[in-house]
Amino acid sequence: MLHKTRAIVINYIRYRETSIIAKVYTEKFGIQSFIENGVRSSKGKNKIALFQPLSLLDLVVYHDEKKEIHRISEIKSNFPFRTLPYEIHKSSIGIFLDEILNKTLKEHSENTVLFDFLHHSLIFLDETDEHFENFHLIFLLKYAFFLGFSPQDANEIVTQFRDFNVTIPFDNDYQKLMNQLIIADYQTPISISRGVRNHLLEVIILFYRLHVEEFGEVKSLQVLREVLS
Image (cartoon, rainbow, N blue to C red; front, side, top):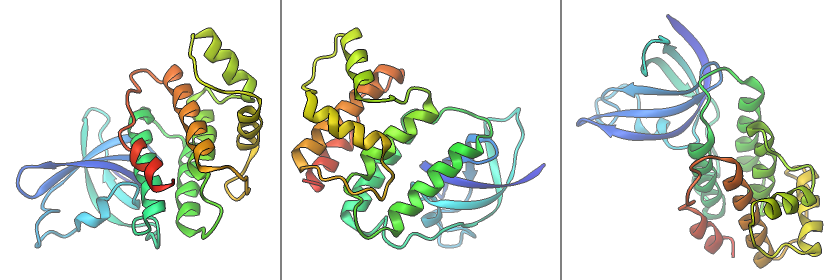
């Protein structure tokens, strides 16, 4: 049966000579895998650029709940990015966000509110020209709400670190900034030095590790720190 759905590409792996299997977060069905034949061939109907991580798509798909891998009938870009893949600061944030989503997006059911949040966040990052240096911090704190463990304030983070014997510097100055980030919108300018920003990111990543099973190492974290430093 054919279904229309918006989608966000998470990643893809090569399959045979010219095909891929794409991991996609769909508005209607949650995380799904799709096989796309011939996409790595010059003769293919669809181009591999459509499947770059975080691409926003409109899909018409064949979906069968009994199958693990589905097929795409029609595909087109929902919002062609203008800056996100091309500006080094934004692309580094994008690579980091994509790794986080790959580790945490698990559900295979419709969640329009979560999809709208992700869709809006990516479009904001692409369109904004200023005050996005804290975007990844605010994103993680907002996204945690959808994962079921968003902190109400910095004191809650301190309490949980204490309960789990997590040791990391997180004094009153850090906590004041964290409280500002927790209530901030993406466009809220918050003055944070590069070193402090990196430390607050480490605090948030540790908080995620307490709540997300097998969260593991964030490989893109070091690159993000270097680019934003």
